[in-house]
Structure formats: structure tokens, C-alpha cells
Amino acid sequence: MTLGLSPHAYRDSKMLDAEIETLFQREWLCIGRETDFAEPGSYVTCRIAAQPVVVWRGSDGQLRAFENVCRHRMSIIASDCGVADQLQCPFHGWTYGWDGSLKGAPGGRDIVASGEVLLPQFSIETWMGFVFVNLDPQAQPLAPRLTRVTDMIAPYAPEEFKTSFRDDGGRVGANWKLMMEIGLESYHFPFVHESTLAANLRGAPNPPSGTGAWTVSVEPRTKTLAAQPDDPAALSEAHRATTYTFGIFPATVFNIDVDNIVWFSVFPDRADLTSSCFGGASRHAGSMRILGDNKPSSVDEYLTWAAQLGAEDNLACERVQQALQGKFVKAGPLLPEKENGVIEFHAYLRERLNLK
Ligand code: FES
Ligand SMILES: [Fe+2]
Figure 1 (spheres, helix red, strand yellow):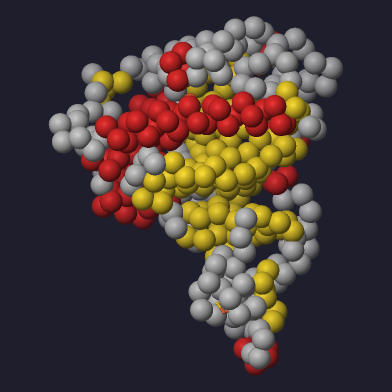
Figure 2 (cartoon, helix red, strand yellow):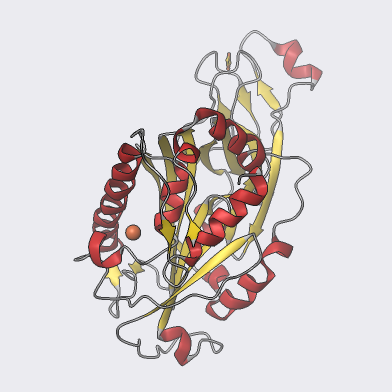
């Protein structure tokens, strides 16, 4: 029998410290899509395990990831997202250019002129239209770990999808791994998503990826989608009969369907508190597709549905987190045919974190 991780893995702050050091400070984490940065000056902020980060498209068109912390007295500089030629710290008004250099400091002309004040940069990589950041300056490239995923999703031409939405997912009172796990299996759909999802998709046994870097869940639609005039040539009947959910370890999940993609990433704040960000992109502007649905929806309709789906998942995760506080709680068996994504995620964690 394959057992889940021990309760302590979800509630212990020392465990979280190890995860931050080993995973969140060393692994590639998706923070958005390239088309979220639609024009020069577009920026998005996030916190990767408490580290403030801003990803910013320069006027040279390049995306760069910076420490979003002022080099004066360490205030957070940018908030949320937006478009700006320069980023200004809200504390004493120092300003930074898109190359990270200090451009202005009220009363501090010599400091600016020294050219010595720069925002530190993090590693950044784009893959199939996604933007990944890695806090480790020695990070190995991401794409070679994902060659089979690249082959599987290339027929959809996801790089051509345009952003429909991107937002912060707020905070959930559950360990970050619970939020990954619920994204990696459909076993819970008939119970947690009875009215939102269960009618559109049928669970199926999923083959292990065996890579230790990602996992995939194949979900047959209850109704095959008809071919559309602008389908890419490589998109087959099999693609129109299926949606795929990929977990890119450690902290990103995305669904891909014929004409759109939806993703989320999770970032731990505490062992029992998790932040997230999420987004969607589509081949057809102004249109999204509710998972497995045959008819397209407006972005507003989609977001209303997604808010309900997210609330259902969050409640399920919070129920587990509450139960995990109990003294007598023990991990139970997992079903390989139904929960392969969770099993592969746990195998990755056990290997990286040296867990039993
Ligand atoms: S902390 Fe940013 S200007 Fe002082
Ligand atoms: Fe769910």
C-alpha cells in the first residue's frame, strides 16, 4: 500500500523551512504568462516563500526578475501589477529603471551617480508561454526537464494563447502541499465539485510520468468537442476528447484544453497558510472554456465559475488542515489508479527532502 505523507509534513514549521530552502529557493516557479506582460514596462509582483519579487518587461522587450526590495532601507517597492517606466519606492521615493539601476534618490545625487546601487536579479525562463522564476542564481535550465510535456502540449500551440486574466488567489488556511495535491487528482470531483465540474469530465487511470519533475492527469470529456475552423493542424480527435492537467513540481498546476490554458502556483506563508496566483489564456480573445465544457464562456462567466470551484477546493483543503491538528491523525492509503498525481508529487518530495 502507498501511504500519504505523515501529518507532520503538513503542520511542522521546521518542515516548511526545509521546503523553502530546498524547493522554493532552488526550483522553477511559474508566476504568469508572457502575455501578462503585454507591453514594455508591464510588471507583476509576487512573493516566493516571503521573498518579494517583481518581474518587469524592459523597454528593450526583455523580461527580468528583480528583488522587489528597495536598496535604501529595504521597503517593498512595487505592489500588485501595472505598467511603469520606472518603479518608485513608496518610503523615500528612490526610483529604479528597468535594468534595475537606481535612477533617482531625493537628496542623494552622489549615491545615484556612483552607479553602485542595483536591484539584484533572479533567474528567469519562459517555456511554452509560461514565465518561471528561480531564486537560485545557479539554477539549471527548466526546459530540458520538461521535454515530454513540451511534446504533449505543442499541438495546442499554447505560446499563441493571449492572457484572459491573471490575479492573486488570496490566502488559504492550509499547507501548500494540500493545494497542490487537490489540483493533481480528479478523484474528489464527484464530491467536492458535484455541480461545478463532475458532469464535464470522467476520471481515468493515469500512467506515471516517472520523471520526478512533473506529473500528468488525463481527463476524458463526457462529450467530445467538435473541430473548430481555427484549430491548429496538429490538434487531433483525441485532443478534442480530453483535457490534461499537468503538475510542474514543486508548486504549479495547469490545465490545457483545445483553446485555452488555466494555471495556478502556490507559495507558502506558514505551514498552515498559503498564498497563490492564477491566470488563464486563450486562443480566442474574450473567451474561456470552463474545464471540459463544450461551449465557450465569456471571461466574466468563467471567473464566476472559477471562484466557486476555487472556494470548493479551498474548503476541502482547510478541512484537512484542521483535521491534521489532531494528535492521533495518521496518513492513509492512496489509490494508484485515481491519485497517481499525488503519489508522484510525494515521490518527488520524499526524494528532494529525504523523507521516509
Ligand atoms: S526604503 Fe526605499 S526609498 Fe527609502
Ligand atoms: Fe478540485
